[in-house]
Image 1 (cartoon, rainbow, N blue to C red):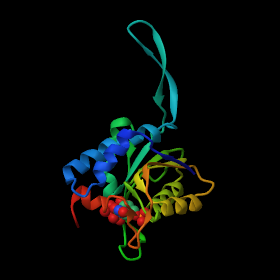
Image 2 (tube, helix red, strand yellow; image 1 turned 180 degrees about the vertical axis):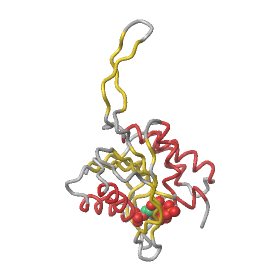
Image 3 (cartoon, rainbow, N blue to C red; image 1 turned 60 degrees about the vertical axis):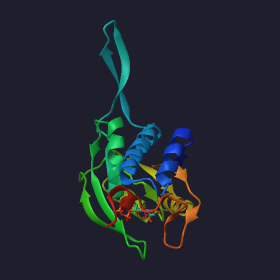
Image 4 (tube, helix red, strand yellow; image 1 turned 30 degrees about the vertical axis):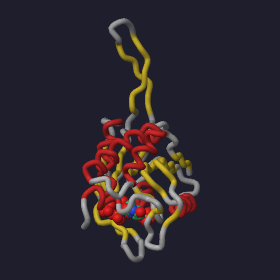
Length: 210
Ligand code: PRP
Ligand code: URA
């Protein structure tokens, strides 16, 4: 597993505002989107491309185009939805599939309540979006889902992660093509399974308490 933790003052600045409990939902949503676009730059470093030529007004130029099959972006509902637009801005030709997951607040076990993905993901590069990697249960379930459908490799883009969750994913996906791109790696999980210092409940902060 490859892990990339962002090291850029703009990203840390935006994350700092996101963490602030007094940041209201509209600002939180705007920042989450901006952060994903910045993280997507790193996450798509290995995106498959093919050589093409274009006619400039002056001559023929060689360049690159995103290869087929197009990448698949998979936001994990609900909080991952807040990251979708930031990612599609960068790869507009990507397709989008959806996974709905919620973790039980007591057992911290995830349940999948929605799935809208192509049946066959052979040779697909998949980009999973979820702001929070806490115990890692939700992300692992998503990664396993995608590999079971034939995905070639999976890159997860998360705003924050706990070391415990990262270690869990690393052990459980040994030998698979998995990359995790993070805005920050935080200190730990607390006894309720929240990332510390974290930013609280990402879904609630994006969309309100359910
Ligand atoms: C949050 C978050 C992740 C998950 C992380 O979602 O968006 O999906 O928890 O926790 P884990 O690493 O311990 O599995 P939540 O289940 O709260 O649902 P929501 O997105 O609908 O708020
Ligand atoms: N899910 C969240 O939204 N926040 C956390 O800190 C952990 C899981």
